[in-house]
Image (cartoon, rainbow, N blue to C red):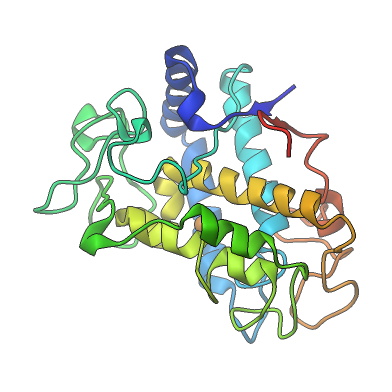
Length: 275
Ligand SMILES: [Cu+2]
């Protein structure tokens, strides 16, 4: 059974096996297919057109399915691996063990943002950035640049308190839990974390940085936490809405999975906490 753990509680062995599985997916070319898929959706999801992966109600079920697929790929390399999650409201500084040399490595150097430490540093030779939007082929970060702050626990709790899943017009202008957790409106949780990390994480090719998966695993957990807090609040919209994935509509690119299929995460994985 897959148990997703807080990254802060991983053992040295768990970190090494996770990193080694990432490096093997990268070496085999499978990793980059995930980067390509994510960027294609970032580029095509629009507020007034068809929208599936982002700025829409299906942001949460789409990323849940995307992470399950990625986690299965990791497990095809090492069956003991599960995606860890990063609670950025708790581990909120560059001194977090998340950014140590034995895990994801640290921030980029000032000259060009290049990550110089850890297994994903360009000089280590195992992490070429091939799916990219400019000429730079090295992983970049700018953790907490310009005094930016990660969301606080109080801000997370204010979003978890919202009882309505999503509202018309079902995009970046919406009220409700989904758009507040995604971050286009209000205190801004998910989007702000991408910006705080900087580098590729602040672009459409954000899965080039392995922290993408830990960030989204925590966003996914917040959805589960919200469901536990609001057991009578359904996914919305319930039925046919132009350009928007309703509860029982299939989602691209898989075309065999609906938001309804993704509401319960427990057939796929559980968490290390009761929530
Ligand atoms: Cu994201």
